[in-house]
Every structure is written in C-alpha cells, then in structure tokens.
Length: 237
Figure: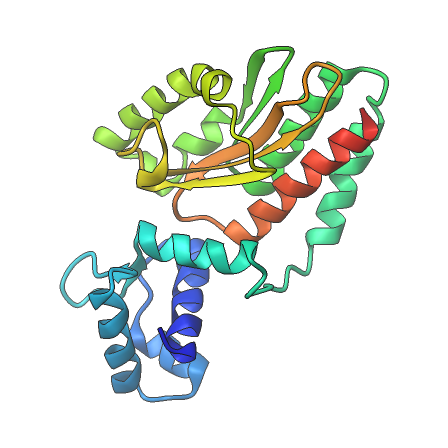
C-alpha cells in the first residue's frame, strides 16, 4: 500500500465514522487536491486488496473489517497519531468522576463506565468482583447499523449474553485488545467491535473495562479513552 493509499484509507475510515454514509471520490478529491479520477483509481486498488468496499453501484466506499484492522494497527503501533482536540477535556472529566468515588471501588468503576458511555456513545462494560456491569444498551441499539432489525441485533444480543463467560474463560492478556467485526470470538456476524482494556483492581489483577459499538466508530478516540480510563482506575484504586 502506497502512502497516498494509506492516507485515503484513513480518510475513508474517519469520514465514514463521522457521517455514516459511504465516502465518495469527489469529497476525497477536494481533501487531497487531486482529480476524482485519481481518487477512483486509488479506491479501486484499495478495493482489490479488500480494505474498502462499495455497498451498491454508484455509491462511495466504506471500510471493511480488514480495512479497519489496518487503520487500528497504525494507531496502536503509533504509525499514525490522529489529532483529538477535545480528548484532554474528556479524560479530565472521567478522572474527576472516578476520584469522587476513590474509596468505593464498585462505584468508581461504574462511574468510569458511565463516563465512557457518554463520551463514546457506545455500550460500556466492566468486570466488578467477577460480575459484568453494562451500561448504555440504548446507545448501542440506536446506532444506524442496529436500528432496523435483521440478523445484526440478534448477533449483538448473543454477543452480550456470552461476553461475561468469554472474559472469564479467555482472560485476554494484552493491556488493550480491539476485536473488529468478524474478529470477535463471539458474535462474529454482529457487525460490532469490542475495545477492552485490562487493569488491576482490588477485585482482581485481571479486571476489564471497555466499550462495544458498531465497526463504524472513532477508533482513535475510543482506544485512547478506554486505555486512559483503565490506567486511571488502576492508579486510583
């Protein structure tokens, strides 16, 4: 993948996350200062490698699970560091809420999850004394991907039903794990992504906090918020 193709993929992922409609060549041509024909040629190459797809004829392009994975890897490996202008404010807001419950572990974790729900508009989860706390289910099912019935909402519900036993049995060892769409060990057809971080708490050395949302989301912001929140909880608790 050339550098320009990498930048076009980044732009498609980030614009699709923001507007929830396929991204067209005209929009990208203006962004990159090249012709629409040039963008279409580059899109064709990205499509051939399975990183983007065209939902229907004459539509723009959307990222595939493989495309999201390439994007996320660039972030986690720090090959790409996006600008997040409101991030510091968001992190401070979570810290203030967590610190207000510093002497009550369960409330501090619940507060952190609730903050993630508000800031990411995803469903938030955390393990508290061996139990799974969830908040923001309404957020999840109000996303365009899950509003109109079909198989996806059922697959998401199945994923949620199996999430607690999966965490208990598998106990992911990475400080931060991102499972995108079909990568999910449970609910492969859900069209959902799980961003989850491990942290030490008074309950366990393997406590978890994270969010579950559609594959179309702002991974850069979500990954950083989840990671920072886990670190914050570990320090506070």
